[in-house]
Each structure stands twice: as structure tokens, then as C-alpha cells.
Image (cartoon, one colour):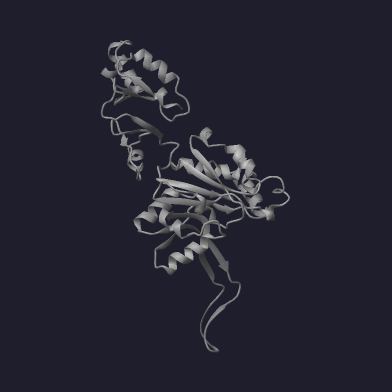
Length: 348
């Protein structure tokens, strides 16, 4: 949806507004934003506003400035986090973001946008995927199809739904296919840059190849995940707890089929019959302060767990945040089959 299609001059007639409303597609509510001669937004206009006016005097030539809603909801453009929850509570579907001159900066469809996170993201997509051979002999693992689109596209689309507009993709093995498929990201309304690894740099090394991230925090994730992780919850957990890095976690349950003894030397002090233990495991999704990237050696193999070790050793704050939803790490054929079966029964 081009933004100018949702703007109408205040001196335009109700008839002209109806024509514009009829031309709106792919948005959750039929609405226009009324602008004055300085392009300043002065009100909103819905089909309901028009119906109420026509019910009174049937004047289809009346100027829209006479009937628009001037106490409309909006947010001012700012670099930090914008909380959308309060607008959802008021059942607002479309939220205009205005600049300092009260001109339209962007329009947010709250039915399609879950959050507006102030994050840039890097997706790690350079691996060989040997365990999925022969499927990955001619296709990079992130480009294997799940439903009607590649694995990595599910992740990109979810990132977009959380307001992320700049994505770096780290590529190596058959990365040309990924670059050809997504291009510069303009078809999805975002910006994509490709970080080419001359050699494998581990799960975090490619971060050092980006000259400068433009957000205070960076989201890093593996490309071969299929998940409905809540990126906003992960981000807010990081901020509210004053952490330097947050790791999304998934539960891993271990069932012991025997009684487990608690002992002192050879004496049994207590025992548990067939206990189960739940562990929180690394889910391959991270948000970290931008300055932590300076700790990553340039152009050298470096795993994200190396950075996590350094954070703990430096007495910085590392937290985990459980994923409440589904999460599949597509590393083996059985995982890929599980994800293919699972996607048939869900709607994103």
C-alpha cells in the first residue's frame, strides 16, 4: 500500500473521498488521513464518518475537513520503542506515525504489525546443512520450502511483523540463491544487506563484518528455525531487567526411567522414583547491546556461546527468556519432516 493513497486534501469532497476509499487494498480498515496545505495531518476519515454526514444532509460535495475526526490517535516518530498495546486496547486498527511537523512518516496496520521494535537484525544463513543432504546439495538449507515459502522467509516475515526494517543476512554456501530470491528487500518493504563470509565464522563472527549497526540493540538469529517466538517479549525482558544480552530459550525435558539416589559416600540419603528434569536450552535467538559486538574478533571463527562466556566472565548480565509457543530447529531430516507436518495445521 502506497502511503499517498491514504492521504486526502482537506478541501476534497466527500465524493472524492469515497473514490479514494474504494481504491484502498490490503489494509485492515478503510481510512484516510486528511492533510492541509502544509501536508500536516489534521484528522482521520472513515466510511463511518461519511455515512453519518450523508445521513444528515446527503451533501456529497461537502469538504472532508468539515466531517473528519480531529481527535484521532497518532504517535510521533522516535528512535526508541513504541508501545502498541494501548492502541489495541482501544480497538484502533490503523496508527499513523507523524514527524515533528505533524506530517505522515509511516502508517502502521495493527492487524499485521505485532510491535515496532527499535532493532536491526542479522540472520545467520551461511551453513552447509550437511545433515540434510541430499536436499542441500543444490539448495541452501534456509531456502528449503516449508509450506509455500522457504524456511528463512518465514523468519523474515515474522521479523517484519515486529517492525524490523533492516536485516543483514550472513551467507556463504550457495548464498547467491538467497540473494537472488530476496534482492535488496524492497519487495517486502524492508532493507536487506548481505554479509559474505570468505570462510565460516561460527554463529557470531559475521557480526564483526558489519561496519556499523544503527540501533542500540541487535537481534541475531539462526536461519533454520521454525518458530512463533515473541520478539517483543524477548526485547522487553532485556530492557526491563537491565540485561546486556537476552537469549530465547526452549525447554528440554529429560525423563529418567529409574530411581535416582541422593548419596553421601555409599549411603543413600534420599531417592526420587523415575524423576523428570526440565532444562532451559539455547534456542538460537539473541538480542544484545551493540557495544558487545566490539568483543568479537574480526574475520575469525567465533561462536555466540564464546560471547556468552565472555559476558558471564565479565560480570555483565545475561538472561534467558522462554519461548511460549512452537520452536523447531531444522537440523536433521526428522526435524524438517516435523516442521513440514506441523505447518499444515497452523496459520501464521
